[in-house]
Amino acid sequence: METVSPHELFTHIRIVLGMVIGLGITRMLAGLAGFIQHPGRYRVSLLHMLWVGSILLELVLFWWWEFGLSRIQAWSFGVYLFLVGYAVVLYLISALLFPDNIAEYAGYEDFFIRRRHWFFGLLAATFLLDVVDTLIKGTEHWSQLSGDYLVQVPIGMALCLIAYVSARRGVHIALASVHILYQGYWIGRVVYFTG
Image 1 (cartoon, rainbow, N blue to C red):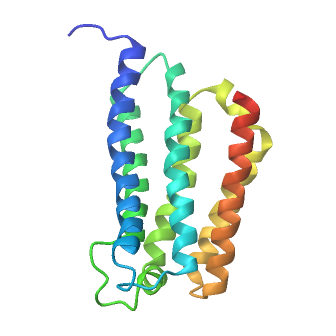
Image 2 (cartoon, helix red, strand yellow):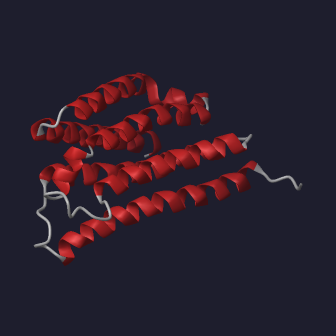
C-alpha cells in the first residue's frame, strides 16, 4: 500500500465530514424553505425556531472546529470512524428538527416536545463526543480552550438532562436561548483566537 501524507488524509476526511454535515445543513435549510413555500401548512414555533437556529449554528461551528484536525500527524481508521460517527449524530439531531412527516402531531413544536428524549439524548452525546474530538486534536488545541471548556461539558449535560425530563415549553425556550448565547460566546472566542 502506498504511503499517504497526513495532509492528504485530512483533506479526504474533511470531504467525508463535509458531506455528512452538508446533509444536515441541507435538511435544516429545506425545512426552513418549507415555511416560506407553504406558510399556512404549519405554524411557526419560537421553541422550534430557536433550536433550528442553534443546531444550524452547531453544524457550522463543528465544520469550523474540525479544521483543528489538520494538525494530526498520525491518522487511524478508528479516528476516522469516530469523526464520521460524530457528524452522523449531528445529522440525526437535524433530522429530528425537520422530520419527514409530522402528520400525526399538532406541529413541529408538538413533535419536538414528544421526541425530546431522542433530541436531548443525542445532544448530550455531542458534549461527550466533543471531549474526545478535542483530545484527538492535541494538547495545544486543548490548552486554547482553557477552563471554559471544562465547565461547558458538565453544564451542557445537566441542561440536556433537565430538557430530557421536562416537557414544559418555557423550560425548553430558556434552554435553547442559553445554548444560543453560549454558542455566541464561543464564536467570540474563535474570533479572539484567530482574528
